[in-house]
Length: 287
Image (cartoon, rainbow, N blue to C red; front, side, top):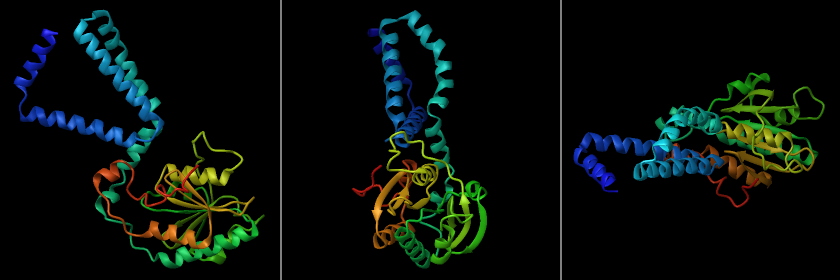
């Protein structure tokens, strides 16, 4: 114990302003990692790994366990190789957020005449819901969806309710897939989207359209509107969350909120909350 305290005192005696900056940078990195993984299953695992490392370091420092320290040093390289495999989805999310330079450089969305687009989407969804035609409409935001656009049939047309309804009429060539909007244009139809990796989704409540809408919002900041073919229920998904049982008026309010310019800062961007709006705070936003 005395030797440990002597080493700690020696370290503090040699600590200068450059060393303090070094410690603060390392602390900021770990703080950012915890923010990025907060609310995910990896957060619990990461917390357990950190606690284990701290306990092992204290035991080896106090008790001088040479064999145990050797074992720890021998297994550390294997642990470092295993971390990217264990945290693969979270690391992908981290790199995705780091690439969203536009969120840091701008205070809101690019300028778009959103009124006619929102009206067309709401009108089309209301008609599709009444006729029990399934639909999946994805609105591209800051993160590009070109990879998914390329899987569909290029349209490049002005957004209109008549065209959206016609695309999703049963037995038409383009009805089975997603329509992707970019700005005030329909870019592509019959697009293939990634399915959600969430294991707690009920197969009775969520079909492939709902899983695809959740999946594309898990890997991007897009907003997806879904019309159920079985029930006609209209839903909105964003950031892996869903609001169900919407009418045209409530759908219009939600889409309008997403098109509004939003202030942002580094911490909100780092934690993945820039652009979340009120959908995740609503009591109806549930799986």
